[in-house]
Amino acid sequence: MHRRELILGLFLAAAIGYFYWRSMATPEAGPGGAHGATDLSALPPGTDVPLLALGRVNALPEMDEAKMRNLFNYTKSPDEFQAERDEAARIKKMQEEAAERLRKEQERQAESARIEAEKHKNDPPPPPPKPIPPEMNYRFLGYFGPPANKLAVLSDNRSGGDVQILGKGDTFDGKFKLLGIDFESVTIGYTDPRFAQEQRTLRMGG
Image (cartoon, rainbow, N blue to C red; front, side, top):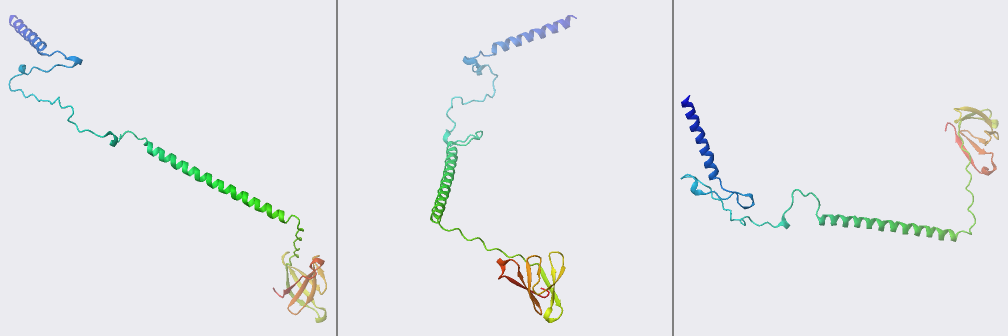
């Protein structure tokens, strides 16, 4: 038991001596919170201590900030913004000029129409358009009977082929009149006096 207490006492004394030596060897902090320089004489002989060139503060090459580009700056330069504004102003001016030309052209056309109308304001009104005779939707199928009193056979295309048998001078459909029957054709006119000079010839089978 006495031997164990002796060993513990020696270990405690060695620990106290070690911590005391460490506290005496630690340098005090310099101005601004930084530790002072380590005393090289306290280091064991043969210790390799790296030397720092702390006095070379201007050793780095100087950079032209005007030629440097910030990789984290994604905005456009003032020159690019100005170029966009100039382009927008140019386009707007072209649109305004085109709108002004269109307005002037419309005014010119309106004035020309007004002058032309003024010239002819006392002219007599134009004649009404010529009436159009009714359309003949008939087909000449043939004829029969004696040569002096032949009868023509007409087919009405509008009603799906209804047949009418007519002699010379007969009227039909309230609009037409059979004027003549020849060997291969018939001549049809109109009952309306406005179309007295109008007639049409239908050939057999046509």
